[in-house]
Length: 154
Image 1 (cartoon, rainbow, N blue to C red):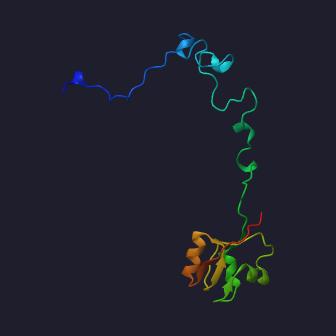
Image 2: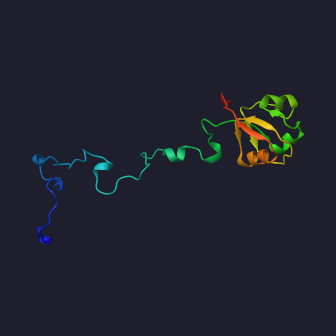
Image 3: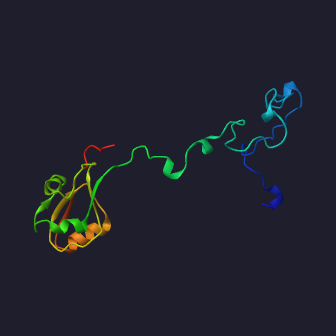
């Protein structure tokens, strides 16, 4: 086989569409662009996101902090350093923290944050732990139990 004998396989190529060559050719007159309007004219048309002069969607939506997340998880948070006042080897839940007065409002499931130091071992049941909080609790000899958060408070 020589180079001049190479050819694409049968059915691998299609003929180029020749537009504007009469109505019997299938793409005559307006060449498949419709009747009138900006999209039927020559040139590039409109940029992506253009809505005919109306303020486009990407500019209508507020940016960053002004646009709240739709299904944001709301947690009741407490830092590891605040747990140092509890009894050693006790079990810590959202209810026990509210009874002890360390948390005053229930804003949703309990989340433990890693600010502060912990020296006593505690068994803590919470919906979420930060990585730093989990390391500090386990370094003090305690344990972290992740419990299902149940219903989220909005």
